[in-house]
Image (cartoon, rainbow over all chains, first blue to last red; front, side):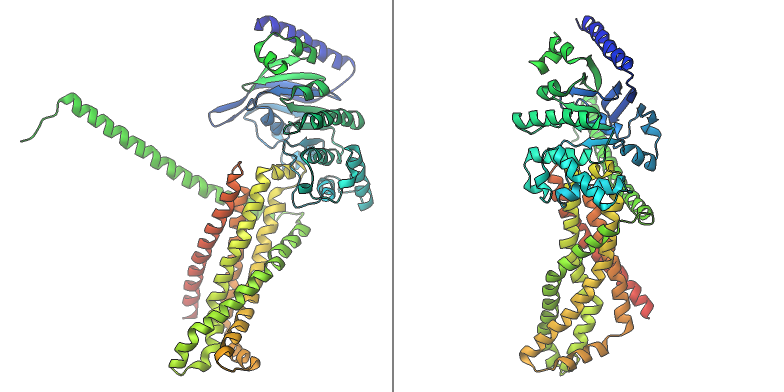
Length: 266
Length: 280
């Protein structure tokens, strides 16, 4: 059954990849044969994937399946054991510190917890990456960009508040504003809807789509929230025990008869 | 009469003893490995810190912010403890001096005690409790809530932004706080002396300062810088290397205070030995 399904999945995958190629979309992230382990625990095993320009790739999987490790390897927060990670045709694993800094200017990262700096106001939180990544900007331009980013996430009124004064959903939005304020070309979302109520989760999922349209970003969205996947996914990959278990379109996943996939989509 | 054990039973006992011994050997080896790993971690941390300290793009704003936090925000606590330190020392030693008719040396004795030993050590221990635990808890919670990683992906070097600034600020501010505590300690001593006696402020201070020599002052100032560096280093190391759970934040803060206090006393012991050797 799995073999039959794998064949079908490969066909769907090739259709999606072909359509991406036909529409002239270039590969922005290409990962080949990636391995990562912590001691004797193999977290990522021979993982390969591609992210095309302008698409939302959702990575599904149970907790501990290696999803977060994958995106931390992409951005260079973790060093993989072997394999290649090419971001805009540059191998992340061979980059030195300044090369990584330069590459990170093209990648935004939305952390699961939001990771807003507690000791800074919302404005200072957004100013922090701008001052370091866009050193040429003047104060007026920085202020304008901050206001624009806050308006795009629908929270311009909280500019002077501290993160502790914000709700969970607001923190996620501000975190997204901090990610988009530096105009990244790729955004990596680490479980963007975790810990939020269904209504706020839906709002965040829609916001991800809005950001993609407005900023023309490519995204990898790590999640186990199926509603978020349904709203945002152009293409999906499912990880199981650090390996790619399934890949294809949302339609393919929803029609799957595989028990593991069905347990996610029921 | 000796009882002979059957050979199989003897073999079994020997095997169990061998297993017990090998378990103990493994435990000891693991403990040694952990200890060596910890030392290697500390060496790497200090090497990384030194490398970042002398690199370009020094975070001056954060450094000044930390100076303000460590220095200015500690002033109320240091004011109270400094004054009490001198006051108590005077109240305790005055009766003995009176008994020997040596009451006149009270200002000088208190000043030397405060400047050489009590001021630096007690102020540093209080700062270890306030500053090192604060750094441990702050950096620990930043690590748990992924804020350090967020800095890293914002092209900011967390070691340069968080650690270098804090260690340098502590190294600079702790000696200033110690000098401030010394001054207030002598003031507290004057208050203590005036409870039962009547000494003028100017006379008390001129007697106190005329007793203090260069050899009292300089080693105390030099070791104060080391105390500051120890407080900054230990606080940052414990916080920066905190584990993942929220429990590790508490552990980081707690172990920062304990280790910093212990190291302050060790540094003081070494400094006293060196001063003694130099002054001979």
